[in-house]
Length: 272
Image (cartoon, rainbow, N blue to C red):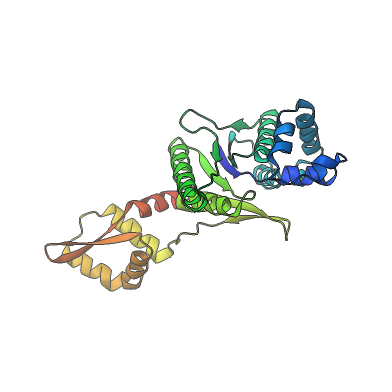
C-alpha cells in the first residue's frame, strides 16, 4: 500500500550541527538569529556541509529522520513525505536538507499545486495570528490526509519535531483523520505509535454500530429491543459522538453518523 508521512520539522539538524562546529559565529548563533541562517541558507558550501553532516549519521543528526527511518524500516512501499515548517531561515535549512535526503534515498516529496509545502508564518499581531495560523494548519492537514486516503494511501503523522503548538496541531490532525500518529520517545529511545485517541468502540459497541449501519430503517419494536440489549453501549457511543438521536413523530431514533462510518472503515482496513 502507498504511504504518506506528514512530518513536522523542528531544528534538531541545526542544533546538532552547531555542537561540533568550529566556526564560532555559527556555534554561538541563536536559532532566532535570522541573518546568520539566511547567510548559511544562501551559501552552497555550508548547505553541502550540513547535508554531509546528516549523511554521516542520519538518525543521530535529525529527530525527524530518527523516527521516520525507524517507522519505514524494512518496507518496500511506495512512500511519500510531506513536510511542515515555519517561515524561518533555520527551519528552511532543515527542510531543504531533509528533502534532499528523501529524494536521494528513493522517497517522494508530496508537493502539489493543491497542497504546496506548508510554512507557518509569524507576524507582529501574535495572539490572533497565531491562533488563526494553527487553525489554518489543522484544516490544511485534514484536507490533505483525507484526499490521500481517498486515493488509497495509508496516512501517517510524525509530530516528533517542531514547536509545541505545531506538534499538537499535527498530532490532532492525525487523530481527527483516523490516521496513525508516531513519534520518537527520546527517554526510552523507542518509537511510539499511538492508537486512535478518539474513542475506539469495544466489541458490543462495534456490533451495534454495524447493525445500525446495515439497518437504516428500524421499527419501533426493534428500537425497543436495541435499548434493552445495548443501553450502556448506546449511552457511551452517544457520549463520544458516534451515534446521533433524532426525533421522528414523537419517537426517538438512533443512527450512525459519518464520524462512526469513517472509524468503522478504518477498523475494517486494519484487520485486513
